View 1: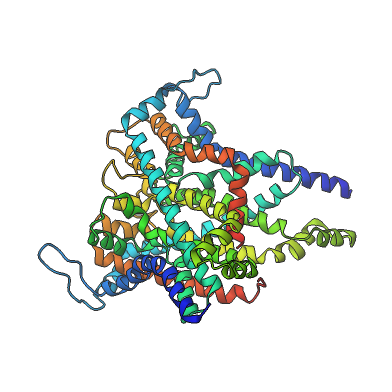
View 2 (view 1 turned 90 degrees about the horizontal axis):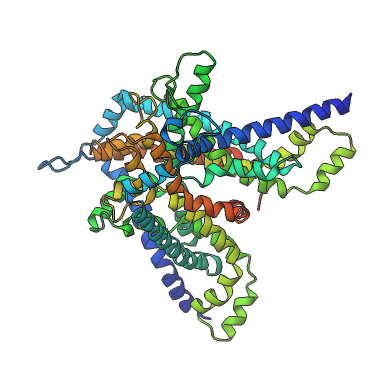
Length: 291
Length: 273
């Protein structure tokens, strides 16, 4: 087949997909950046170029810093915990443990539920007075707990849901990773008299590094992207105690209709994701060998 | 001595694994309890408490769940079919042709794995309003149809298919579309199934974008309908909310129970590639 013909084929194959991809990813990303230098149009007042004014507002916005640190705490709490739990789950499900099908089913279950329904279920679980957690706490003689209603604990309440939802999902990838490890490696180490911990830290865990990389990239993106449970559980409250960046973007744009400020916040979120991705790429890529 | 330590560590492992599993099913069991018992037993555990379906019929009558379900099914079907077609084309071009700017274009595809449509809600909302597609099922799907993830996954699969197969087809005079349909699609079935299941569960459960873009009973998917139902001012009872929550998750949940192995295997293939 000749070259010109090939190019025509390529053109037809790429155009429909790329038109949509560019219209809903690249153009909006560029427009987000551009609009962050403009003011929000209000009534008859059209939006006008304001330079870095939105960024100055953002810099001085105490709520933004609160939300930003909330998201960092959320990420630092949810990512390592869910990865460690998922690794433990995968090791258990992969071993000859009693009731393996039940264990696998329970761990993976939250993954198929919508986050919004998960939020509802946990809202009830947490509810002061008749939620299971509060019932256990009060029956042990402690005062009633309002986990989601208090400034100190609402973020942690939401984080627990994030961990619950994500760990089983990551377990699948570790399970795949574990099953790809040749069993003779382990057998050889056992003949040499290595104990289980030694085998895990010196053989299994290093061989799982590509999986850990993949899972951690996903976990980082998810910790900035998933906010459905917050919409139904706390609406970011009380007083922004459980608001995450994307929720703040949603609220600025679609509750307060300050789209210029929302795009400015989006720029921060996009930059943050890019920086983390580049960081992960350089730090972890050197240690990983995969095809 | 060593055997006792081994025995203990094995026991601890079993206890740990089971405690975690129980903790993991507990919230759902609690919701099931509330939904299947009369309100008096909402938080009052009594094995002999009478069972009831009242909460389900009550929830069903208070919101148009049937319509929401239909919307979700239409939306998910539309998205998955479009993804299959668009991503197959783009993936095939990247897997089997050489062309200018190939690397840059592929980097653009991969960028979507990082900057997902969920993050660009403000600008995408403006685009949809500009296109006059507000409050339509098509609008829910448009940003997701050309999926970077799908393109990447299918390209990997297509690359692993021996090129001799399409050379043979080409000699017989088959065009590109015919080669894709007769050679590549049948040989990539496991990937299509895996990607399909992952995509269905993602879009069935997706919430934020549909919440922003829909505004009526005729377009709202189940997730948005459920949130409106459970956050309504009227103060619906927990038992009814639990019943509504279980009802909306039931179709996917039952599918998961039946196809548990395929689901897990699919998420595995999708992740390894």
